[in-house]
Image (cartoon, rainbow, N blue to C red; front, side, top):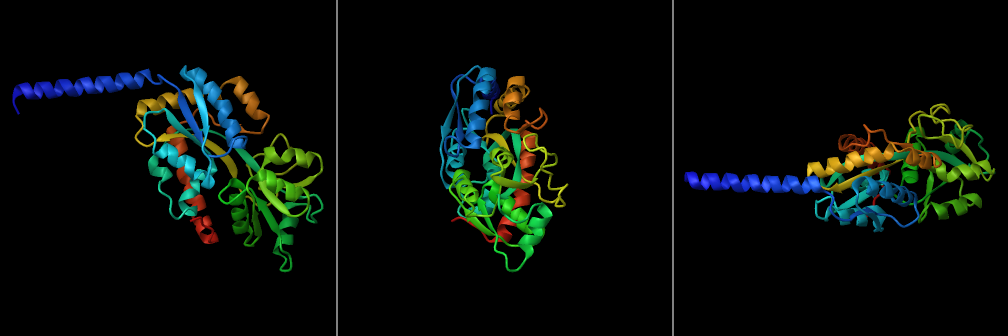
Length: 326
């Protein structure tokens, strides 16, 4: 190669790098879309909409929500995986993202390879509850009741792959017993039958069950977290109740398509960290018992670690259960 060509090649490369860096420094220059792979009005939709408004303020651009539901969140996730890796199409997902590799046999993407984590948003502890006239009054009594050969216990859940479904599976594993799982199309319908006494037990976010417990319409056995929750201070943790291995929280995170430039990911992560430290945001989430991520947790590294750890936790449990979606 002649000296002239070498100089020209170097000049063009430098110009491209400077242009690319400049574009990333200017990010964002237009509206950002966050895809929520579930229906409007659910917990993750509510969380994402609130966060989006504050992210928009930090990024000085409008952030809108696009609900793209179907197939346990995989349809919306696929929409983001296939989007341009430019930071303008993001994904808001929960614990369910860590289960799809084990649950879906014909999955066309891999969350660990096809998404770039931005940061953890927060998490909600779960609570184990039962219909108000169910005989057991403590978690240990419930375990003994379940283990009786003649008993057939029905566990309601909001659908295969959700956090309450995972809580059921982990509960079964921890006490070496088998329940009759009754999946519903959402927690709302599951509550209807539980409140009516047509099903026995349910494990759902504490935010959803707390009012029913306070009103005496459901009885609570334990919360699946390290600490008691403020909305149900009299309900023990699973550790206090004698089952420390039963720990499940609904955690939320933000993601971008794989190969999104690192400066863009860092810009989004820094904006998220600022939002989560806002007093107004903290007060709003506190009403729902949500534990907000710390600045250290709201990072790509920590969210990637959480996704990997949770995938490794749930995959063998799901495979052992024999439950799958084709």
